[in-house]
Picture 1 (cartoon, one colour):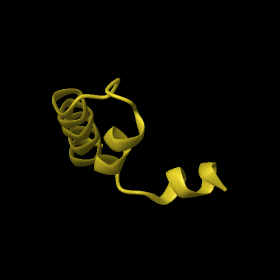
Picture 2: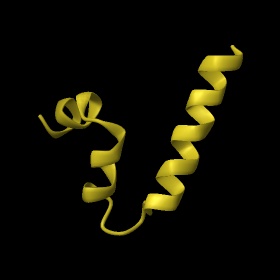
Picture 3: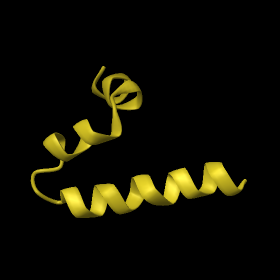
Picture 4: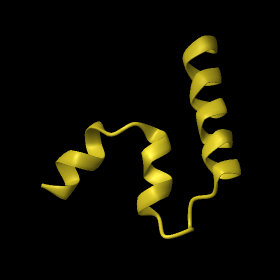
Length: 41
C-alpha cells in the first residue's frame, strides 16, 4: 500500500517521507532535471 501511495504522490511530498534525506534544494534540482529532459527530449 505504501508503494502505491508513493508512486502517485507529487514529487514535493517525497521530502516529507525522506526523514531529511531529500532536501528542498535537491528536490528542486531533480525537478529541474526532469523538466529539462522532457523539454529537450
